[in-house]
Structure formats: C-alpha cells, structure tokens
Image (spheres, rainbow, N blue to C red):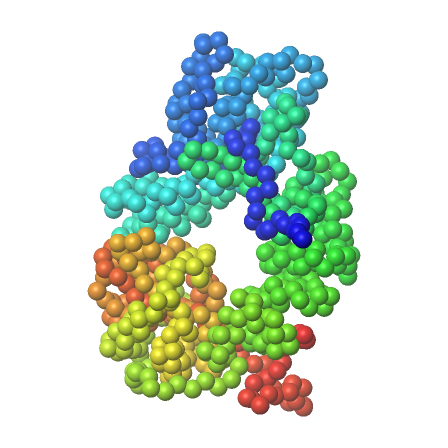
Amino acid sequence: DYAIIIMSVRKGDVLEEVKHPFLVVCLDRNKGKVLLPENLPQAAEIQEFLFPNDDDDWSSADGSRNTSKQEFVDRALHKGTTAGYTVVMTLASVMTRKVKSYADGDDHKVIALTDEEEELVTEAWIFVQEKLDWKSWQALYAVIRRSACFLSIPHPLILYANLVLPKLTSESLQTVYSLLMEQLKLPATMEDENNRILCLTQGIHDHCPPIPAAFVPYDPLDNNNALPPLQHSCLPTVAWNASITHNSCRLQVVALYDLDEGEERTFSLVEGGTLQERQAAYQEKTSNDSCDCVRCSCERSTSTLPTTNQTTARLGHLYFQEERLDDALRCYRHAIEVDTSLSDIWHAIGAVLLRQNKFREAQRHWRDAADKHQFLTKHEGISLQLTKQQAYGYLKESSSSNVPSTTSQLPKYTSRFDGLCFVTDEPALSEDDCKQVIEWAESNKDWTTSRHYAVPTNDVPVHNIPQLLSWFNQWMDSVVRPLLAKQFGVVGSSVYVHDAFVVRYEAAKTNNFLPIHVDESMHSFVLVLNDDFDGGGTYFCDHYTTLSPKTPGCLVTFRGDSLRHGGNVVTRGTRYILAVFLYHDPPPPPSKKRPLVPVDDDGASSFTFGFTI
C-alpha cells in the first residue's frame, strides 16, 4: 500500500522566483538623501551587488549615442538621490527589448506624474529618447506602474556598511569618516578612535533608511510572460522579496506562514498602519472604495475576530510585529480557547507579556500552561523558559553552595548618561574568580552563535554549566541585586535574570565585535573577565562613548531597553565578558482592605494581571 502525502507550503519557502525583473525603480527620491561620495574606499565591491554583470547593450539603437555602463553607474551612484538603483535595471531592459512597436501603438495612455516621478522619468528618458519619444516613454511608465509590486530595498550605503567597513584599514576608515561625516551628522572628533567603525555603521543605519521601490516581475508588454495574479489582503500570506547578489537581481514570492494545499496566496499593496491609513493608501493605489479583506473587516467591528482559528492566530502575529500588544493577546487567547494544541501560540502569549515587561506573568503563563498541557514541555521555546525558571529560581527560592568568594562590600561606582548607566570604580569580583568563570565557560562544549539571531555572539549560557550557575546565583544575591537597588532605585528581590551568558570576542575571527542594538531586557550589565586584549568595550552610540573598564571584575550596568550599544572591535587577543539581561517586575502593593490574591506555598503571588488560562 502507498500513502500519498500532499506537502503543505512551509513558512519561508520561495514559491515563485523571477531572475532579472523588468524594472527596479525608486518611488520616493527623498528617501535616499545620503549619496555615495566620490572616492569612497572599495566602493567597487558594492557596485557588483547593485549592478549585476550582464551582456546588455548600453549603446543606442542607431549607434549615435554610446553611454557605457560604467559611466551610467558612476552617474547614478554619485548624482541624484536615487542611490544607484533607480533606472539602471530599467535601461538594461528597455534597451534590449522591442518596444518600438509599442511606441507606435494608439492605445497607450499618459498618466499624471508626481513631482518625484516626473523627475525620475525625465532622467531615465534621456538615455532612451532615441528609441522612444517622450509621450511613449510616459505611457510605458504608466504600464509599468500598474504592473508593479511594492517593497523596500536597502540603501547602497547599508550594503557598504555590512560588506566593506569591517574589512577596511584604520586609514581607510578615517577617509570614509571624513567623506560621510557631514551627511551622517557625525562628531568632528572622536573620544576613542576605536569607536569609528560602530559610529559610522550606526550613522549609516540611522540616516539611510530602506528605499521604497517598485518591481515589475515580468515584461509588462508581454502578458503571456506574467506570473499568476495575487489578490490583495492587509493580512497577506506571501510577500515579495528582492534578493540582490553580486551577479543577479531576483524577485521572489515568499510564504509568510505554513500554507495548506490550495490555500489562496495574497499579498499586501499597502504598508501597515491604522485602518484609516490603510484604506487611504489602498484607494490611492487601486481606485477602489475600500478594502474588504479579513483584517479590515475585523477592525471595522472591534468585537469581531476572523472566522477561522488559523487566521486569528496570524492576525495576532501581525499585531505583535506592529507592537499592538493588547490586540495580539486578544487574538492569541481566542485561538487557544478554540484549539489548545497550538503550542506556538502558547509560547507567543508569554512573549507578548514579556514585551510588556510583565516578566512574572509571562513566566507563570509558561509554567501553568506546561503543567496543564504536558505536550508543551516539548516546545523548544517553552522548554527553554522552564529550564531557566529552574536554573534562576524565578518562581521559588534558589540555593547556592560551594561557590567562589565574592567582594563583601559593594564597589564604588560612577554615574553616566544622566543615571541610565553606571561603571564601577573597583572590581565587583576578584581577578581569581574572573579566571575561574572563564575556565568554567571554556570547559563547556556548548559555545554557539545561534542563540541571539539579531546580533549573534559567540557565547555559552550560564544555565548550561552547573558550577558556574551555582556561583552566579549566589553572586547575584550578594552583590548585583543590592548594587542595582542603589544605582537604579529598584527592588533588588524583584530583579529577575532573563538571560546570562559568557561571551568570547576573538580578534583573529569575524566575531570580534557586536553591532549596535538594544537588549531584550529592562536592565543589563557587562562584567569584564580579563584584560589581555586590545580594543573592545561597550560603545553607546547616542553618546559617542565607549565604556571599557580595564580591570577584571569591573561592572558596566545600564538600561538595556533604552541605551543603544554595541561591542567595539577587538584588535588583539581574546576578550571575555559575562553579559546578563534582567527584568525588574515588583509585585503589586498589598490591598489595605482584604487579600484579593491567593498566595502560593512559596510566598509568591499567583496574580496574573487579569489573565486566566
């Protein structure tokens, strides 16, 4: 006997792919104000990404005009705000296609252009005017615009920051800094020259947002070459993705969720936003009165949720992404009321609560859900939380024994950044104990770069090493929590460890620095473990300052959720730190009238902020 299994589409699968789409065009020139300056060191490396190698003829049809591709590349990169992407692909396609017959037709229609579009279309027409008159070129653009799908592409300087900056010498970095300093509004002088790469990188990310673009996945003059049409929905199941590599530009249709066999594929014509904002954008792009997709229908009546549980869960995911956390919880809770087997949704509820800084409620949710539904203990995310609950004693007392000694008196410290950050003036841990922490960490084989996907570090979690964990819990109680109480005015006993890990930065490897980010925490701290390295330190980009205590055992404590920071490049040796993410979540004040909240045997309140499983 044979069983036929129809595989569903999995999240992230590429459903369709078009190589060298007909058009890549910038829609809003004002979004690309920062230009690539002349003489930018090693800029040729990103030109290969921006302008794929091909054999397109860049000469005019009659040979009277011979514009080299490099000449146009240089012009596009260094002149105008279109940042190089704008019309290069357009020209590469138009000049190799038989558009003359279209230009001679009578059915083309000229449309009204915005100021930005008129400037863009005029600039492009200069290079094709031997083939198309102005009216025909406008008409071709009208067809293109009606056929386009919309998404964003990275600014060329983002590619430059990611691909080129880390490889530059100090002299080249100085050149780049001088060329971009005014455009990126960077300080003329730097307190520490080692800050330069992170300062440049973050300046580029802050001032070079993605460029809104239109892609046409097929020749708009050849309807036989079109992809299957996709219906619009503000709760899409697929999305367009532009993949630009050193030798090609690809347009892909990517699944946003696991899709059942035969399930309709929809994509969104509009950006997120309020119902009113989406409706206005939809009307502008389609000339239809309103969007009647499932999301818009539900939002017109706030008490209505989608008719299918799968759609309700997906709507919750979308609200989570848009930081509409209460709406996400409403969808998630409804989904598990209908179907308790949705393990990802049980996990997502806790993640939303954590995002709302309701740490204890999130942990109780995961614990209680796993107690009630044993299958949840096999969910990777929930299992990890249960492991950390046990390791760090979130919901019960923890004990420690046989641990190294710690500094008995709290170290003195200096306040920085208006009380958002503190640096100890003396060690909070002895040098011998720092060496012991490194030894424990290095004896473990579970070093990984996969735990923090947004800003990966080479690290090992504290809860994976029993001796290190035992010491850490005692040290947190005797030193860190009392210190945080003095520094930030928090209730020390209500400071919870969300994550703790030893990090290793090696000068000779690619993991020698950490990009700018904010932590998934309320408070964070970095414990310096060694001093036999050069470079490194925690760089706070909004203050253009690196804090790098050189004495092992010193602490840098700060608001991890509000201070953007990164790890400066280690230029020699290996730097070890202990990094810890914390949440402060004190219990509500007791009622003066009568106890409304039952108390567990361990003395912890079972109050769950109105949430009941």
